[in-house]
Length: 402
Image (cartoon, rainbow, N blue to C red; front, top):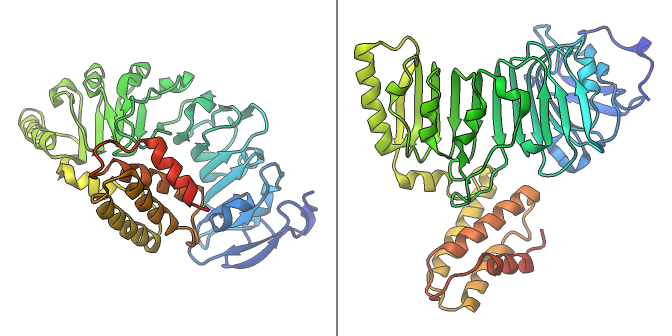
């Protein structure tokens, strides 16, 4: 149980880096270590390891007010940025009195849950939804500037006052050849005026059919791989359009489709369409000057995308990524000489075993290695018939101990 508040230091009185014993889940339950210049705090289950600063079981209630005593050197509430994995919604009650600048919440719920955050003082809220779990309905904070929702969007709904901007990053597959992803119904959130859709550049494409449900859009940002870009022509009210890290712009309408457009960014996009967009941007400036930022930059050839995003090790720590890429290069070269399934199995097994003794291979890294094995199975070889996904996965599972 939370301890008596009488012995608490005054609000905002602790501004120095150091080690502090706090009564987060009971008297003296945790030691909080504040590093100089760090304004963020992460709380979550012990399986997160070093990714969480404070370990708390998902079903454990916390006394969030223990953080009232802490402030930045400038005097604003600390932590500025909170990252929480678990099921205690008490932070939303706490935030009715103590503003939170940015909150990232990965809910772990034991049952379908409705939460009223309408009185919570949040500037930015990001909700990370795992592939499975219970359903969350959220009554949105008033005057919320930014709402982000990522992962399995079918587990989420929201109502109330719309955020100034909405960021959606659905969980898609890693295969760009998969059937396009169709966004689930998001209810009242379709009323927002500013939307950002985010996807992996070489992942399963997201169909832009979903935009027909957003009738009020005047600002749209796309990041990654999408299809049905021709449907953007229906959104003639756009004043802002941003295209980033898009390897495929097939079907993109001409810029004059959006007569109200006064801000346009194309950054890290495929080269051919990028040149076409640059010409249009300059031509439009002669008839109606851009009143805000307009640029087309970092045009990319097809091979750039494969180098930057083709392998699944981009988010790994540099040391591990270097080892993984070296192992991948060896396996790819050896597979090119494989003349039988036995040869291929030996190559995949050798690649897989190289990671059995490495520290830091958790669930995410295992999924990345599984994807790498699939990519290797699709690379060139001399067998004369394809290596199936099931076959490669079986070899991978048999050889790994992570």
